[in-house]
Image (cartoon, rainbow, N blue to C red; front, top):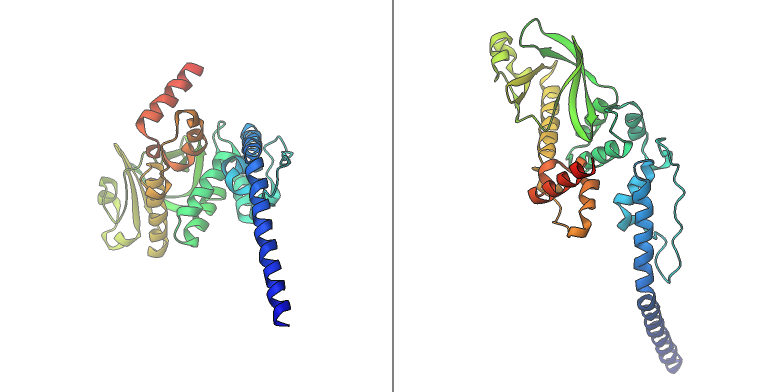
Length: 292
C-alpha cells in the first residue's frame, strides 16, 4: 500500500510538471499572435466608442475585459457587435446610472462616453457613497437651493450638473435662460459668510448654512436648509473642483510614448486638464488646430 501511494503521487507530480511545461510552451508559441489579436480587439472598440457606450467601456478597460474566458491557446477573440447608436446599453449600467444618463444636460458635442467617463471617475474618487448619490441626483434631476444674487432678492432655484464637452458645470435657470459656472474655473469652495455678496445680504446667525463658489471676478453664493446638506454639497463641489483642476494625485497617469498620444484623448476630459503634461497638451492642441 505504501509503495502504491508513492507511485501514485510520483505519477501525479510528473503529470502536473508535464502539463505545466506543455501549457507554457503553447503560450509562448502563440504569444505574438495573441498580442496582435488583443490590439485588433482594442482598435475595434476604440473605433466605435463615440457611437456606443459599451464600446467606450471596452476601449478604456480592454486590459480587463479582453478574453475574459482566459487565453489558454490562441484563437481570435470574438469582436462584439456594437449597437452603432447613442442608445444606452442596458446590461452595462446600474439603474441609477441609466436614469442619470437618460436625463443629463449636455452640450451638442458631449457624448454618452464623456458622461459615463465622468461618472466612473467620480465614483472612484468619492470616499462616501452619499457623495456619489448626490452627484447622480444633481446630474439627473437637480435640487432646489436658495441663491443670493449680486443685485436683487435671494430666490430658490434648481441647481444641477451639466456636461459641456466633457467638463462639469454647475448650472441653474436665470433671467436669461440657463446660466452656470465651470468647476474648472472655480478657485475656492468655502462655507460661511466669506464673499462681498453675502457680507451685504446674509444673516450672520445663519453662517453655517451658506456656501460660496469663488471664481475670477465673481462668486456663486448659496444658502441651504440644513448644515448637513451644506456640508455634503461643499465636500462634493470641492472634490469635483480638485478633479477638474487635475489636482487629485490618484488620477494622474504616466507619460505615454509618442505613439500613444491618442490614449490621452480618451482619458483627458474625465481626469482633468492638469493631469496632462504641458508639452503633451501643446502637441495635441497643435494637432487639433492643424486638423481643423
